[in-house]
Length: 548
Image (tube, rainbow, N blue to C red; front, side, top):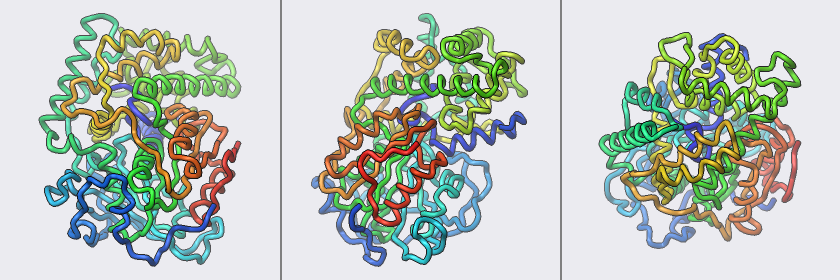
């Protein structure tokens, strides 16, 4: 598997990072403004039909828009959802929402979408929240595509406690993900075998092996999930959001999208601009870049994040930093390590070995959050000095959704299915070989891996729906768009592009001068205050607001 595919790659953003850190610690012992449009008492109506520019989409039957959710204590997450296997407990409740498999046939077959919520507390010490009325539901998508919101929201809920005073916090497994008509491809053993195939082929034999692995993966997805594959695109997921809005009883959608979740939010705003209430985008996917451009931007972004890590490591650890003084020296040390792993994988504390692909995946995973930099330093020190790969393997496994028992969540399968259903582009081996010099120049560490990842949709049984996502949203309420200058997975420039594409008076950009993927959960008080005031007090930030 490749470390970056789209948006946040195969990651569900911070949930995977939290898992990665936990896996590293437990597996290795390494420490490491305008007026409000919301009306909490207004029942949901038929705004979605009139607000959508997609007039050809048939209206949904009352059996779906009028369904009553049965909220119950949440069970432990399924294997497909991932997580640590334990139920979240109070205050979390779970329910199932029925949605059309095909929105072109709304009276036809339905699928079940898994939801989770924590009801508004009505009390708190946040920005002017104490004793104020409930606003509605705030729906989260944490990215991927492919991350389970049912698992992720409870894991990160402490970051949103102030918002929970006036919102029901709600998340879900998008169609094709987790417990929502999950895309199923290879079993666990076959996934391990597929991951062992060299993802950066050096000769024709390795190219042939990679092609065979991709073809086998695609065939397994079609065999096991052929019915759902044509219906997991982002446009359909946006329609699911509007169905949730109606069933949850909100006149407007209040939404917090992170990473790929920003693309989903933009597609929603385009389809239903009149239904947008409060909408936040954090760690923003650039809607103007095709897969080649986006992936090249990610190669540059991860290289920049790696260089920032190496600089901090040198300042903190001095001569003991495994990447030395950073810069060219640090990059050379890492590329030397990766070159050695290509022919001689490192042992770990279990039966598996650390391959070149797994090492790059582990490095990329740790760059998503500055809190994981100590784990990355430990993993690189372990690999270069002790010649063992336990820590980097743990990071890579968390990234790929593999638990300590060897079971995989379906996040990688869902990521590929959703990406290939969305993107028309299909890249061949010849295409990639022509792109390799450019990608290698962008990143000596990540260039080959990101470039070869472009072939993953070649031969996919479903034609992609568009060249680029449509996110223009004239008439929408203001949308807050957060860009982090040190973001590796969704480079900072994407936030500006998204704000412009949303349209004048709609996209409002806020900048964080920081490190890591996204900004709200970074611990920056300035950024959190700006977003909280928007969500809780209808104070739209001034365009160009910058936090450092």
